[in-house]
Every structure is written in structure tokens, then in C-alpha cells.
Length: 93
Image (cartoon, rainbow, N blue to C red; front, top):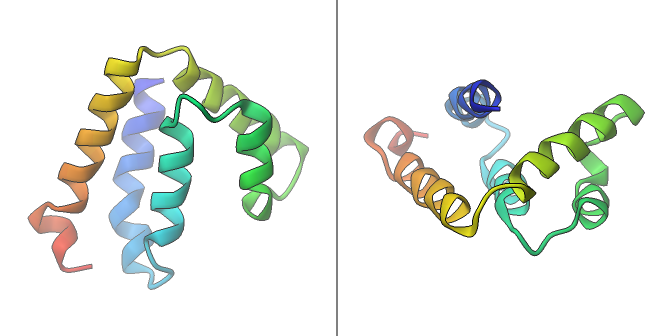
């Protein structure tokens, strides 16, 4: 789980640098860490980004990992994401 989060966070600056914009990434991250968002609603909200059943299954498992966390942990992830967005490294994107 931690490795997946690290890899996802490592890819953020590259995604932004590619010129596709970070609004989509921020939307997905917000949906992922939202404890009120169910797996079904999560999949429905991200349908445009899901190319097939394998990706949907992986996203369901990924979302469940976040649903299993405490609200304190989810809040800390949100704080961490804000720190990343406001960091010097991300400022140029």
C-alpha cells in the first residue's frame, strides 16, 4: 500500500509536466481519500479514466485500502498532498 502511494506521488510532477493539467489528478486524489465516497460512487465518478474491468477491479481494491484507514490518517494524507502541491518542486508546474 505504501509503495503504491509513493509511486503515485512520484508520478504527480511528471503528469503535470506532461501538460495534461493537475486538476484531474487532484480530483482523483480527493475522491480517493474521501471517507464518505463509497467504492461504487468512486468507480462511477472515475468512469472516464477506467479503460477496462481490470483497472476497475484495481481501483476498487485501491479505494478499499483508503476506506480501511482512520479519519486521522486520511486527514494526514490530505495535509501531505497540500504540502506537495505547494512545494517548490511543484510550483514550476
